[in-house]
Length: 168
Image (cartoon, helix red, strand yellow):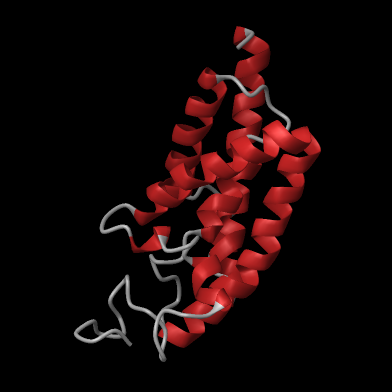
């Protein structure tokens, strides 16, 4: 633990310090230590990852990045949550990154779509419409990541409808 930070503090580091691949992946390179709204910070940072994947590998690259973040993030989030003994620590933001990238998968890379996706995903991640609320109750890293993926699928569907309806 970091000196002076209790184990249950949302930005606490795992026993033995801040090192380790699980910590760095789960916190998205430390973005999860943002002092407030760490999930929003993680979603914003994910936009850079999405942009890089979209520019270099296109839609399939974006989907691959979302899958990679979800799979590796499930492992990392589970490890970090267990080490901190907190069910869903706020320092874990890889789930928001996976969800944000999935939200924008196979959609036009336009600013209205990206901005709409960001806000829709954040709202749905907070509201957790069914079955996201049930997915959140799954054990370990699976529950940490699954609710964000459900919120992302909802956001992606809503964006698809908006793109068709408003030609954005």
